[in-house]
Image (cartoon, rainbow, N blue to C red):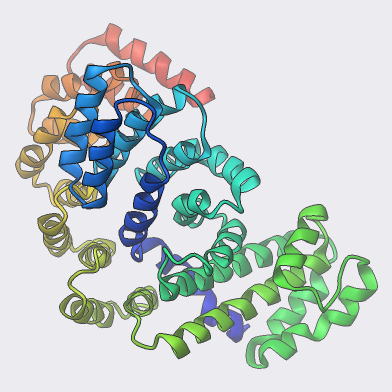
Length: 453
């Protein structure tokens, strides 16, 4: 399966890079603002929209807060406030205001913004049903579905991701080279998905054998079991497109012949999209960044680091490069180098919450607890401190011998509604260390209840 294996190794690399996520969001978010209907406080909210369009996000935040203070909260004011906070990298605050806006009335636009923000902070299980709803009901509404497009790969739902990015090829808000690269990644992950299902399906032996025999023979060798597929399945047709085959597979998900066909078509589509990108955009920074991640996945990390260095020098305005470089170092346990890359990212984008979270992780891994504490304490001044920051600060406090401070941080997060089984478990542990057995038992009960949900 060399023709597939050579692509399959790319899959893990795709998890390590945001590949221009921030650039895409800027364009899509501003488009959503432009379509917003201002119902209350038109003067202040119009000025807030103008500030957002001018990328003056702090100004927009202040104007929205003023509008909310002067009159009844409207969904529009809450949404624009959430958007301004998102563009500052303040995900926890953005989630709060998107949720408040949805309580004023459901709209797919706000729902998509909330889902994307939850995905960004890693709340994947909470966002999974949200993405399913958006895919089912709003697939053809590009300004909505494009907001959550990157999330489907994060949740390992490559078939949905490929379907969406195929639609986004016609969306001018997404750079064509970025879309082609991400579509290729989605097809690669789809090949892995369908092959895995095929391997477990009844009657798959001749199809898996054909794929194994294709190791040196390419696509035509992989198709050698098509006559057998046609013989055993009335749903199989060698002329089906990838999209048509997916539609038929959704109706017959256990059909081995369809899974076999989709494994092949996914690989062929991945090769085609990558070739189109290489032909049209040979110098694409997104393509080069992706190939650097592939180098790293193949074990050539030094070459990948060198490629990132070149990209940073040649494309200093791309927002994700220092972040990607930090991820390469983090993967190798090079905490000092990773920390420096994430600091560079934060120097340029001070409110990049993902970079901040990764820097915090590196400081803890390097046992630099005092530095982690100094870095995290200012984040507690937010109205809605990020959950990860509360957990990391509590760990730093504990390591520095201040268990009571760690308890205070996590208890505050619990009161704000951020409690989950991990937070309950950590509080249980800290209460035990502090000798507060009754509190520890309470958190143990809450932990056990949350584990059963």
